[in-house]
Image (cartoon, rainbow, N blue to C red; front, side, top):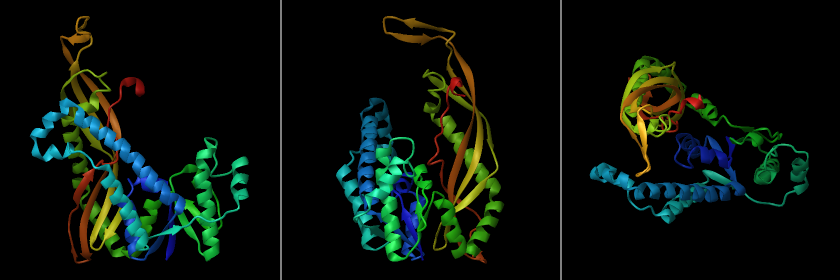
Length: 351
């Protein structure tokens, strides 16, 4: 059983326990395919970072609720969930309980604090060597102590492991007892390939047979999103009013996919593609405007179309059921599109 040590940055990238990939890693831990560790430093960083990001999120949510222009949405019963008050203490309690339950069940094991030879850390600090980079070295001390804790733990227990992190300075570190990597998505796919080779072969065949339908899923999503959300264009049109949007072209490039989860008979994939779009936006014409000093605002008398072309890195999550070679679904069900990708249009001077 392989030992996997997770850095705080992985949890943050995966939105703590929300992301598909972090839950895939935890699922492998439950199946005893891997043993997951975090240091006690990471344990405390997780709690502190969760509270920090939650505070930011609640502030943004409250600003949304206070904006009277958003109240119209309450006329739709399905959207009323956007307006409740948030109990931050309850959210924190649930998160911390989830984390502690994983530790209690030994899905995640803690590498505890212990006395370390701090000379090892300060030697790296003054040279500098990874994880100390060229930036704010003081902020990198938790990373340095984490590495020493893991190295000491591995040597004391006669084990080796992998640390997964997105921190560039951590990735530059080198220890004989473990490796530091950021490709946990590839790691997941490798494990699931070994576990479910038949499922992988069928998934690939289904991906090819559903290639056109998956492309169409991107097209449908972009068409609806680009036509419905006028706020996408405010920055590009210098915050003038948007009166109409016409989607002229959506071109989806070659698709690629990775298996991100296999739970029992359900295979989940992430499909990625570059999508080029061309839209025409009907907005106010700055050639026909005047400034009203009384109400301190601009008044426009004509409109014109402005055309924007952008290319976006896009992804969708889809799943299918595969029982065995002779019993499986023939198509994918799309779960979400572009959940983690920013879609926006910038003014010309950004290009």
